[in-house]
Image: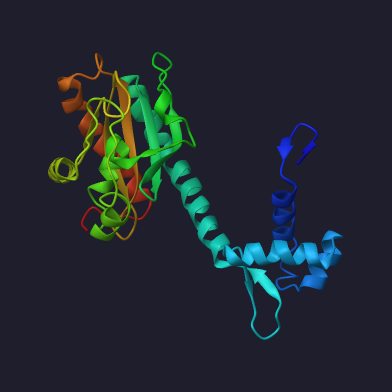
Length: 261
């Protein structure tokens, strides 16, 4: 390991691997080991080990005829995820701020991956700092409002692969911890169009969440409004749920979703 100025500890092999990926440009879309070795000013044996690792993980591909390498489909997949989140965040910002301002509460925007939600934006009510939802942080889908709102509309294959195949661990005393209870909860969410997190991931916190759909009517994210248990009573949930659903609908329409579908 070594350290660059103001960058903290860096892992040399990881740094070299990223630099190899950067060798591939529009003019150099395919490169051989010798060419990469020359660009990197490293031995062919060192380059081969790094390139072989990148190939094994899908970040590079090798042409069977020329034996040269090119950027792999894994980078395309990750790039699409980043692109969709950036677009989603930009489209949702104004609607989330409007919702937060109306009720003076914290609003979250989250997407999902492999059974977890990933928070990508947060409009903060400074009267209440919510520890479980920092931007970039992951959380289990089954115990968060945004996660349950999405799970209610994903396909069965996703549920079986990432949710029902494992134990639902209790995070608080209110966390849903059985598959049967979660199935019932998802049915309720579908019938009313929104999810409620009732101190399931953080004691003292309640939230109301609704799903965001893409142009294929598939859930890609969710928006939620969060507040303290004392502030978000049952009456408030009844009122705010309408605005949370409206916020999610407006964002969905910006993402190409049609309510008629």
